[in-house]
Length: 308
Image 1 (tube, one colour):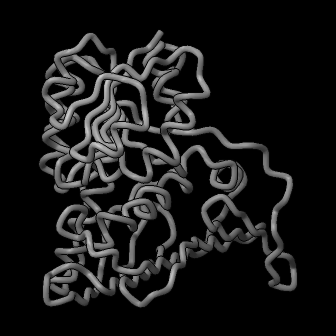
Image 2 (spheres, helix red, strand yellow; image 1 turned 180 degrees about the vertical axis):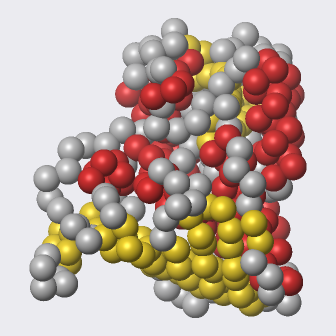
């Protein structure tokens, strides 16, 4: 039985992680931490307003679902305690923090997994397996400003980090350089990001992100010689010879980052064959891309990104 402690019970945890943990017969939700008593009352387990008492209990792993600005503190403390950690994206707010956690994970010989849920969607897995000879990639992301940028960062940290992770994952090629233009609100967070991403020995990806316009859009279009695809999270479309998009309706049920993490804690996952890194490397690399985009937008220069 895997005993897990949960730090942060926000909406994503309640709607994604908790249902999957409850479906398993080999997991015990051993403790909870959240500053909101109403959230703590929804689960019958020892509950705390502070994460420190939770980490003193006899648990095997921690799920960190706290606001993004607290990820480094909470993940570092859990790893130091000798726990395996699953943390929602982004891994941290800076690449330096993420690099420190990757090193700590390796030193402690503990799993550090960023919950990149799209690695486990059947739509993304189909594209990754099928795509060849890619010519170009475009991604568009629009999201209304939810007023929580002080806790979660701007659209690059709060949302676009998914795309910055997924594009190189789909093509199995790292992003090695970026150019960008960025518009910011008076408070400093991004309202519009127009970025060009160069993939190693591959095509260029164009990413456009708009925050605060009252619209929602989340799609990646991959144009290839043989078969082009458009991803809209779980939905997948394929282009026919006349350039029309058709819904792909034969996808199997996808997996989840939650289940994958628990299986990894139980030793059921070969790290070399895992669709997501078990030492935090993919979380670190996505943050390097975020920071490179910000630097490119600030300086007007093309910014190179080192490979891990």
